[in-house]
Length: 393
Image (cartoon, rainbow, N blue to C red):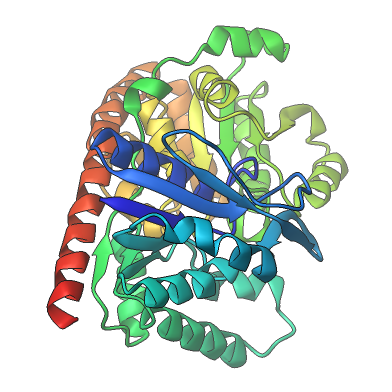
């Protein structure tokens, strides 16, 4: 099958969406499919280019989004200029990954070429707008997101969601298009190869110092203050514990100031973005526990990565993360309460035997979420959607 994916975000912009696209592409290519991607250029180039390899990346000139400097929107005129080149390829299906320029252009191409379109609903937008647009009345925020989601989902032939919770949310919006739960997978063997001792040495962290690791976007919706509120309780019992934050985002400067004002700067380390295929897996290997306070995740890919690295997880079981945390394998579920969260961390940091048991469970669970298995599920959904579209046409 020949597939065109279209997205508003991809590497070098680091995000869960980019990682999900990369994972599914790799898995689909391993199965013999051909996958091209239409994506924004991040280097200011004025003409589209194609990476001439087996995974053609069509980089489209883009403009920066005010207030969101990490993001890009592809230019419509530049998108139109690439149509002639794209139309020379007989695509079987378009997979839309994001709801902005990519969505509307993907739908337009699918209609022009008379092929089915699938979209991935990666983000729980109803939860996000509460953090970013609090001055807008909540009922208006909610209704706007639900209306837009309904329109976009009914403009395509099928919808992919990363968790059962997200499927239920879309069904509650009245969406009756085919919805399939297909989480993003990982290659467990990749994350089992981290060099923890070297990572600690690079960052001048002693071999004995306990490390709590958070990886992800540093943003309001990630509920990171829960970790800052839990940390003093952990320090009372384990004075040398270090909270390590990997990632970046709009809340970083606020949190750095908060750490200073609370006298926690010596126990918190902001590392910024780490390269996922090398430095990040080393960070997983160096840590003792993975801590994840977010309550707005549709899946939480970093949870799977941490488990694949054999790193026990303490997290808040909410929305998409319930699919993992609710299983109780390699994980411990904490309430959205600093004392309760701290209690789980203290118990595990003090009990090497329990951590070792959770580490073994974590690797077993991650194997069930392999990249190959999830790509196979997606390939099957593609086949069902194309067969259904052929019957209708």
